[in-house]
Length: 202
Image (cartoon, rainbow, N blue to C red; front, side, top):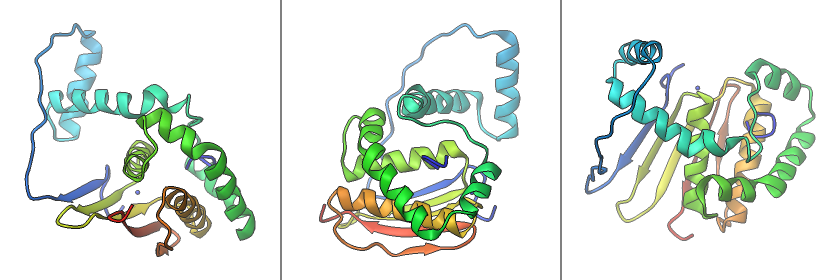
């Protein structure tokens, strides 16, 4: 969680994209010298995740460039989930909404510009998904580009109803600022937050 800081979905998240065409990203071959012990650990982790070492290394590089290289500059720190859930549990609901409003107004634009180089609804959703992935929350994202641009998310945070309220408030404020001038229905539970956003008219 930004200021305060996923079992039934998946362990690393899932994104389902419905498109009419599929494009393959261009790749190049390059040689690096890697410490033997680190390489052994990389191969072990790749086996545990049932992926190739090459896929794992590409993921690590992508995560670094998309998030880790600028996360600290954008104000993100690592905080244990039980600590956050315990603190937020004792905050009144109105205080949680006020907290989300403060974070939205003081950090959202700067953070997204720093991490994604532009402040649009699409870059905001990309930022949001990067944060979910790197936080380790199981999640599901379904999107379609067949004449519309709807994105549905289910995020399993396991931090209580007030955490769902905080995230829902934070996202609604972000979407409002980016021209999504309509109320988005957030389905909040003790463990998950689910919502659908249609950015066709943005």
